[in-house]
Image (tube, rainbow, N blue to C red; front, side, top):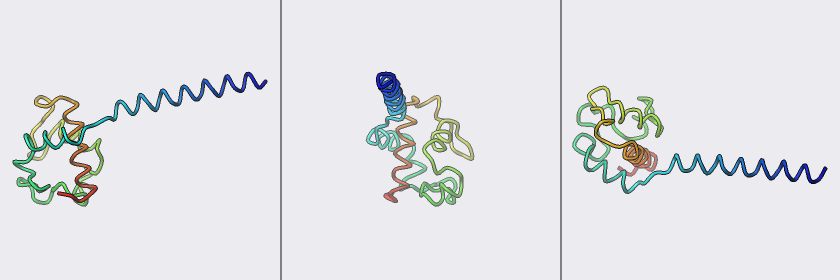
Amino acid sequence: MKFLFSLFFSSYAVLVMSTHMAFSEQTAFDLDAGEQIFSQNCVSCHAGGNNLVNPAKTLNLTDLHDNNKDSVEAIIYQVTNGASGMPVFSGRLAEEDIVNVANFVFNKAKTNSW
């Protein structure tokens, strides 16, 4: 019985660790690369976290929350698909670049460091 329990527990631990590692790999991002992408593609409208097209939709956390963009997933969607004056970037940026810039934006908003 101890052997079966050990076997079951070991298998479960391997499964949990494998799932966690796969999730971690999918959510990996590079804030420095995100900053570079932001500087090259976004700063013309969003310098300092502002919004030159629509001043009510800045990149500070309060405005992101008010506009339902206060998560990395929501920012990824916005960058990928554009809307409300923002261009679509899915044809210009690689998926990895979009993930990096979204994490950069969300990090700056969370830390209020624009």
